[in-house]
Image 1: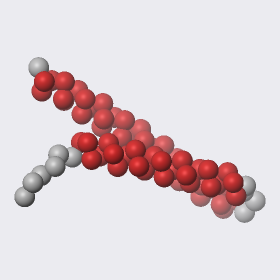
Image 2: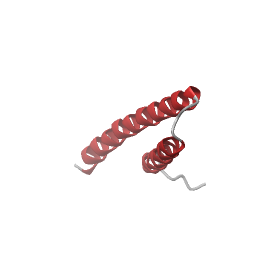
Image 3: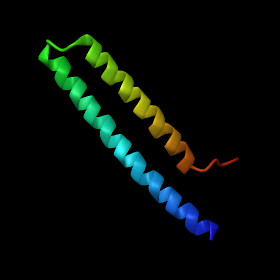
Image 4: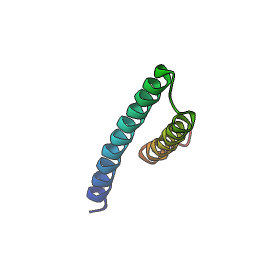
Length: 72
């Protein structure tokens, strides 16, 4: 029964990480577009970049949870 739960939990994490990666890519595209305009608000770009970093941290945490530690 524990195996069944772990598989479901891992599947949920995999879906969540894909959603976060998509959001990260979208933010990256938005930042690039705003910077390309040349008239973008510096504060808005800074906030988007901070949000992007937070997403990257969440992705790393989930990735660490999905990747088992291997003791050599």
